[in-house]
Image (cartoon, rainbow, N blue to C red; front, top):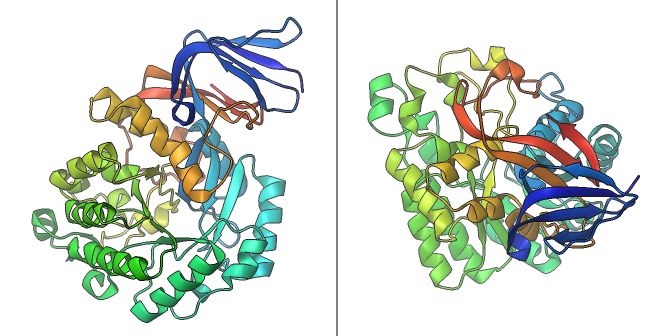
Length: 426
């Protein structure tokens, strides 16, 4: 590979507290050689004039589903990679709810090998916390970690048994693994498909109270005070949950929290007349909850924004709301939707980028999310002001179940580099 110089670019890298116009020099090995306004140039290097576009570290998405193995008709490594790169995402934590479930060493070997052969982004696979994601018996954390597993999650299922959860935390603490919990009490959430409240009543649908989320967070954080491990709440959706998080953080309990871009950008009123593409887990809640989540990011109570990319085929979504599959694609629109929070003055740009890059990298303990010298040249370059409209048929994902169809956005990815090579260009 020839040395490259990206010139005339606004560099924003929260890991270095950097926001300046300058150059990025990438060496022959795809590493950052120098960066910033004092960065040098080379006559032999390939020069790319970015004309004032913004460069940030490649995004790190902590929660995305890939359909391999078992659900290739929804998504596969190739289509997930294409969608991710078009959205500036260069590192993805993939969920274990494949078929078969990633809960043993042979499946880990398969997924890593398959990803290496087919994916064009950095993949960091998760394994399930419990066997078959049934919530009964722990998987072999130690063996799975040794094979390359980055963390453990039962995806959209919650460990209901408190005694089992305490053992999970205790063991996770001993061997330093990350536990990522979906917070929802099964009995309170049973048969529900929407937030409990006026919209659920009007549509005649079974609703779930935010207490179902809050009660699991309270339980887990109580256990965490006894069994301190690396613990991450996958996604929160309510003001009440934030109050619990704030209280525990002020008491010195150490943990991290994520939120889906859907819950930051939409509320329950957007569901309208049974729009099944907005059937999500956790569900869209009130506008008050949405605004509280934004404040949670501002106050460092929420550390990470995820796409919660869940591809579903059209047949699974075009059903009565209660029977429709849950989830939305979102990896390609993650950055643009997040930038909406900057354009409407809800959040500072640096804070948004921090939640999409260095924060998830630190939680996962991976060497990504930064443009410091010597790091891999995984770079997202975007036009901060570029207007565009989301059209499902134009998205790269194999499935088209976007929750933001026809949404007008401002801010578009123009180029994505992976290890110094241009992997996507628009």
